Amino acid sequence: MEAGGPYLIVLVTCGSLREARRIANAVVEDYFAACVNIVTSPVESIYRWKGRIEKVREFLLVIKTTQKRLAKLEREVKRLHSYEVPEFIALPIVKGSKKYLAWLRASEKVL
Image 1: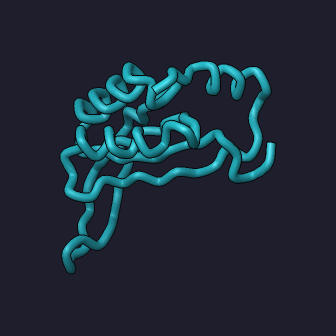
Image 2: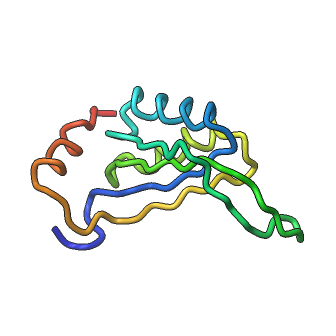
């Protein structure tokens, strides 16, 4: 499979484990993602927001999806997320096992 193909990893950080679980369950239930891993140990994020340097603990979602579902996934994450500007970064899956990628694609529902 070539870079920029149909399979993606999307990274989203959440302010609480409860929010992370709510978003993960919703996007899998609604077929916007095949699988979501939740890093249950908080990550420390340091960033600039509205002119100030912020330091917070967040929970990372690693979402597996397809290009076809990306726009709907992003809308759903924004709808459910508590942040004014939630992190939403999509990275191409350049290579993966054929069986896993076939499963990922098969998990799509006609939307």
